Image 1 (cartoon, rainbow, N blue to C red):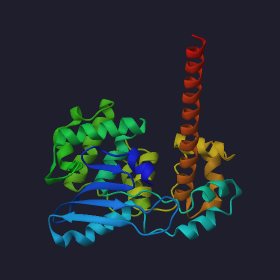
Image 2: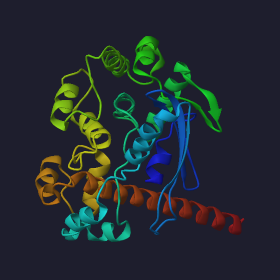
Image 3: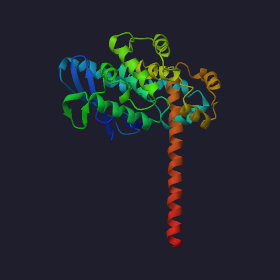
Image 4: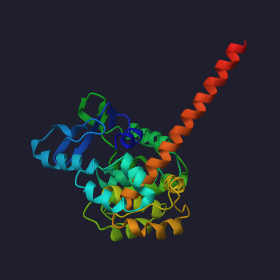
Length: 298
């Protein structure tokens, strides 16, 4: 969870230090910030939450956001029991029991960030989100440490126009159009929607495909049964575990994971990213070793 959050942070809006996730919030009656400290790795325990609010009436809403971000309403023991029945997933579940799906702060932000992340690296999506946040310049009334800004509102994004959105012009325009639709209420992206309804509304819009719609449903609606079979990282993780990598084949194979395919997808993501990190570390070690040998020879 912390690895995922730390690799997706938007400077000024959120950051991770040690085992604490810090985040600014736009709430019904004002703004606020949260600091969520997770228990030590491998131990059981509670999450400590420090909440700062402009208006105390927003406390319930802020706590709901905290629980949503960390997927604290899930049933990890039940999830692991279902997925653990598949031999292909046993090793990953043993290594990381209770793996959860990172949630979303709100619908508009989740959709904008998902669209910014289309067909680019995680680092590229971070850069695009950071640039948009700076351009919007929606600041907290009182900064809280490194937290200085709110994630841009749909109305502000629409007013800025596509020129402030990194990436292809067509995608930038699609993001602005979606922001304008959310601002005027013609597109509703919130937690009250069903996956089927929200997906239908999203894929009907230019620039939004099945991956984006599924990603939003998984993280915003906490739908436990979304498997992003078109995701390259998930497919790589499937191959590493001896599972089919082709989307149609993986879709059929995943029937045994219902109704928790979102969590299975997190395991496939974790396996692929862990292997990529291992490969990078091995490559770095080889480079250091070659440099050492050259130095010794000199």
